[in-house]
Length: 398
Image (cartoon, rainbow, N blue to C red; front, side, top):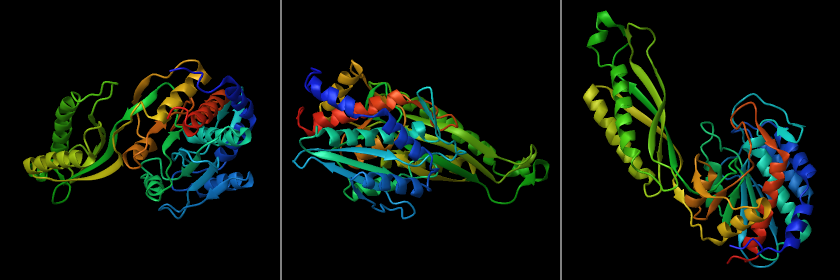
């Protein structure tokens, strides 16, 4: 594929229009407003007011979450053509707030890498497209929302945006994945399993040893999950992913010689395209029911469905436009790869039925107190997004 499909003068014009300082100012404004999941109202208001003040068309759909209506912004060329969506989440994980700062070309602060820096970059791409009049067809749709980060959020606000028709023909998401073009991703469900027995906690020598053991039942769950994971490991994708079941936490008992009545296990189940949640759910329910019967305990599971598995067609015009944009900005193509985590791209592909490209800055420290992202990376993302829009919306790769 030739990287000269977008002429050099247009590339130069876009690069000149994108302002590193404007990206920093936007990101600093967003990062400076604390927005832990379920509490993104203030930062959403600030983003909406900023875009409206710049003359963009802004809407505030509730999208199933009245405490913090989403932000929707549109820029249209005025001519028919595809709509490229930029989507980002404004909420951050529940950690102590770290204010923004810039030192030696690095941006720091809560949400700088996940993902307010990326949101600033996608906003800057839209600004550059408007200023340069490079978009001759189609348009840009920006959506930003709350309720992304689990376990505090369940993703339903972006689901409601999609169901409400706030959906482009393809979408870019500036999560911190910069080294590949992710064309496949696994589904995810978080498992919260409770094992119970009748009665009260009791000393082991005063009848405890005669009770059904929630500890042994929990151990059997772990053992059977380990056996299941060995089978799931055989279900692989050519790009390196495999299906899995994982246990990360076990809690039970109060003292070494007391027979407890409850035990809790937390873990995950991840699956590949070709399997759906209904199938995975039925398999888990049957397994846990069997163990409960064998151990004389009651076993229940709260399933926190996160996202379904997906795979996108690399030949889609939006994917081609993105590939060429990367070549023109970075000098070489990104390899096709698998997305290691779950994000809103899974939903856009599975629920929205549009191709979703997760691509953002090479940032560090997501979900920690030490988030950081090079300003140069935010500039690069803005350039890639703007050129992808030109290639896709203008119909160069149709």
